[in-house]
Length: 363
Image (cartoon, rainbow, N blue to C red):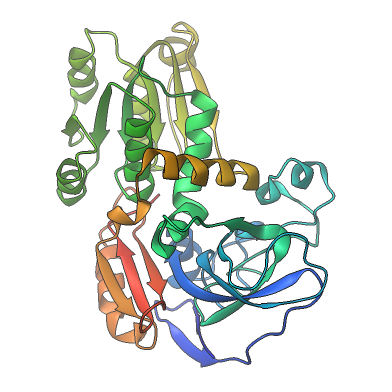
C-alpha cells in the first residue's frame, strides 16, 4: 500500500508499505479521509522540531483519520467489519488516571503513541487501529465530516464545553483558520446570539462571512477592542476563544471580554503578554487552557452534530490526490510562508480515487 512520510524538508515522500494485520483488540481501517493539522506543518513538514508528544518518529503521517473497518483482529468488544469510524488520534496506555477519564491526549506513559507521530497514521490506504481508539461515524455524516471531528472540531468543542455557550452569549473568536471557523460554526449551533471574528487574513474573513459564521468581522487595529465593545453596549463579549496562538490576538480576546466573562486559549504555541490586575483580576475574568479533547467528548460531539444537522466538511475548499502529493508542494510552501497567525491545514481522502482535501487555515 502507499503511504505518505514527511522527511522534514518541506516535501512529502510517498513510500510502499505492507498492509498491516490486526492483532488482539485491533482492526484494519481503510482510510477514507485524513486532515492535516497545523501541528503537522509546524513540527514535522518543514522541519522535525517536535519533542515528547510531538516527537515525530518517521511514521506514516496523519493524525486526523476517518475510514471503514475492513478486517477484524480477535478480541473485539464493540466494533466490527464494515463499521464507519473516526480515529481518536492518541492511543494511550488505558490504565492511567488520564486515560480512565478518556483524555488519552494527556497520558504520560511510555506506552502512549499518537497516530501519525509515534505510530503509523492515516495518510495511507490502510491503517492499523486499536479498537479502544475508535468513535462510531453515523451514516448521516461523511468521512470528511469525521476527519474534521478527529482533531479540529473535537479540540474546539472541548474548549467550548469548558467555558459554556448559550443564547445568553456574544462570542469573539480570534484566528479564523479551520479551528476558529469550527468554533464559530459550533457556537452558532449552540445558540450564541452574536458572533464576532478577527483575523489578519482577509480571505479567511471572507470565508467566515460567506459561510454565514460571523455577524461582524475585523482585521486587527489599535481600536479593535473598542469596536467590539461598541457592538455589545460597551461591555464586551461574554465568551472569547483564541484559535490563533498570536500574542496580539490573545490580548484582544482578554480585553474584549466583559466582566465575569470567560476566555479559552486553544491555539498552540506562541506567548501572551497582559497585565493581570486590570485585564483579568479586577474584572473577575477566567482564562481556560484547552488541549484537544477526550474520546467520550468526541462521541458527544458526533451525536450533537447529527442533531444540529451541521457538517464540518463544509469548511473544506480543495482536494488533492494521495498518489501525487509532491506536485502540490508549492501550494503548501506558499501558504505556510505567509506567516499567518495560525498554520494552514490540509486533508487527504481516498474514498474515490484517493483525494487530498485542503482547509483554509488552522491553529
